Image 1 (tube, rainbow, N blue to C red):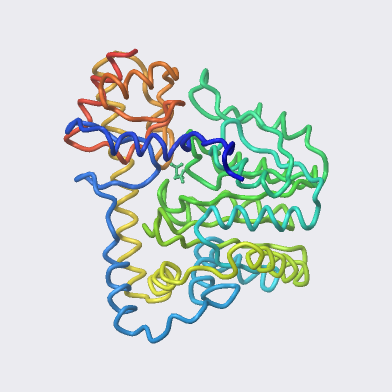
Image 2: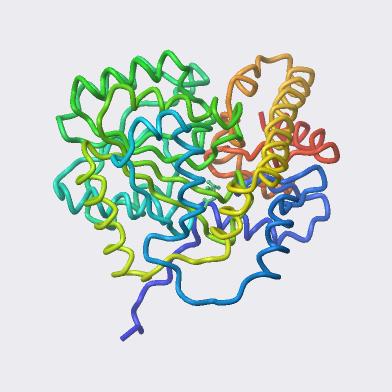
Length: 395
Ligand code: LMR
């Protein structure tokens, strides 16, 4: 049966991360995969998570299945984290949530619910977007169109073009947004732009679906949620895909959640029930460990406090690296690299060609994606000058 089955090429992100791991050069630099790395180059376990894990391991008495919707403490913590207590209270039972295997699971279950409600709907995605969005949602059967987003000429968001393209969307279409720390560009909407977008979505009766994988890694937990919260002042419905991979550092534990906001209580219940049924068709119930840890971190005042401070440090370090990298590039080239400090989160486009990115890998063992997206958090005091020299050598 499988004799002529084609062997697929490696994933565009994971394949390059693997190529870097396999590179024997001791001075190699990995700026590929979107994982936070500390000054020593390690993707660390948060202290708050270590503490929650010690507690969990000493107290856990069963490995029985999780409920289909997931861990109640985790879901409650995530809802409040994303919506804020006031908005959550205001929306009441118009909000439902289902725990998922990571943010990908959340995007997928969100897509399943969209397809169940309106199989012909078109999803508008930013150009560019995270390369996995389209296969992840498209394999459910949804159709896509793109809206202009990042402009290499502006070295940032082209908001007018974004609005102009979304003006072409039909009522009932879905707009996939990045809640903060746009992946791959790092270019985000300002608070005013989020409000303008909310008005357009309401006017044209478009449904926002927000991929919210980086809350707290741009400007702060509430600041980063400001955009989607302000859109919710204008529109009655929303789907939010949440990941606990980055901001709680639970990558391999696959902890995430999909939040549904319906026009009324019944709609919110229907959306969650559809998500649970879709999960049952594919993987049955969510994994436990990561969500149980995050649930403890978010619900314990003490752990929550430790975690918030840890996340602030992560965010501060990324923003510090952005400034250092900008300064070093300006010194080396005399050119303007201010766009690096205007962006948020871990990602930035260096504006190099596929060929230049390839040469950096082959000649210098500096690994970035073909699009020249780099993970800023992969920079550190030991490799930053080497990266700057390497980039200058191909410019
Ligand atoms: C990335 O964009 O590098 C991350 O979101 C990790 C992934 O799964 O692609």
